[in-house]
Length: 120
Image (cartoon, rainbow, N blue to C red):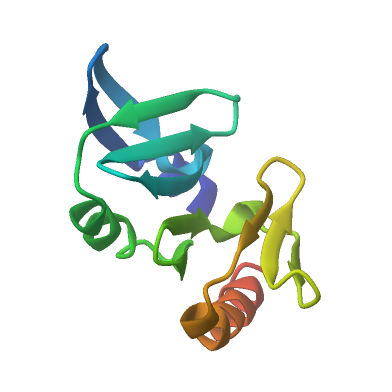
């Protein structure tokens, strides 16, 4: 039932090549790069938009699986497999390792543990 609800949630984006409807369960992470926002999907697709990062964060942070791990990264916790203390990074098979911002470390750990317990 929960999976069916999650599959119905999506994000509509406008890029220079068109409009995209992305299921949130396929969105691994979002990265701010200069004046662009990059969306990385589980199928390997990358979508580049000229949105500002802060409204994107405001929208996605409302969903329990998304967490701000750095001032430039918003990560879907379903794709995190390890929080590597040596690298100070969140790591996963598909996302590689993404640096955790110094000011975000405690929040990432607390929210990841809470989210992991709630999805068991």
